[in-house]
Length: 113
Image 1: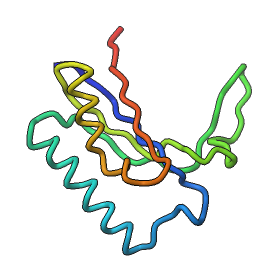
Image 2: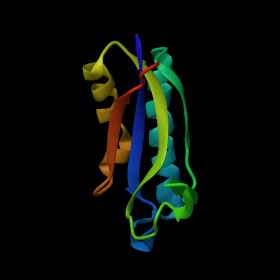
Image 3: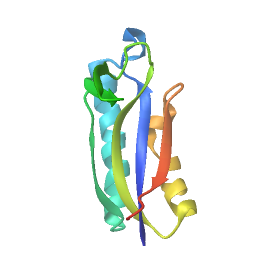
Image 4: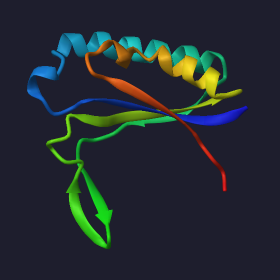
């Protein structure tokens, strides 16, 4: 089994794109059920949500980020075990975040150096 990271991207900044508290409860239940299903297969390694605040370091200069003009931000990630990219992509394709307009997930293999 190999390790993969699933990055979840969605609009964290536009007020109209934010769910109501009731919608958020439904979404969190769907997300927890999805992660629970992965864990039940012993393929869940870990993960968490991310804040909207951050810093970017480039050319030894530190700036605030992520930038507020970027609507598609990384909201969180999970790490999973999968036999190959196809299986990891299949698992990622079931992420309930994909039900939201313009939301996306990215699957990347974790490479140990």
